[in-house]
Structure formats: structure tokens, C-alpha cells
Length: 79
Image (cartoon, rainbow, N blue to C red; front, side, top):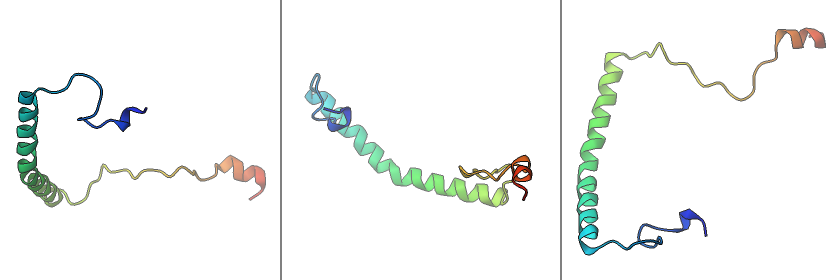
């Protein structure tokens, strides 16, 4: 059985006590309630960074897996 086949409630090992289950539920509730606020913080930060420096001069695009032929390769082929 692969490790990904287990959910947090069905994985082998010690079961959570009722107190641990309540604590986990509280944390999940707080994270769920804070998520929209955190998304807003990220959106505002993104907008501010774009206004502050609209052009990113340090950005280098990712190269594709295929590279152009070398000059020496094209010379050997007579192109």
C-alpha cells in the first residue's frame, strides 16, 4: 500500500486523543478563517510591487528544452 493511500484519519499508528482532535479542529478553523485575509495581503503586495517596479529587469525567461544549433554544427552541415 502506497503512503499516499492513507488519509490523516486512516493512517496506521497511534490514534489522536479527543483533546488532540479538538486542537486540530481549532487550528483548521483558524487557518480557514484567516485564508481570505492572507489572500488579500498577497494580492495587495503583488499590486504594490507591480506599481513600484512595473518592469522586472532582472527577469530571465526559462529556456525551452530544445537549444538552437551551435555555429560549428551548422558549419559542418554546410548551412
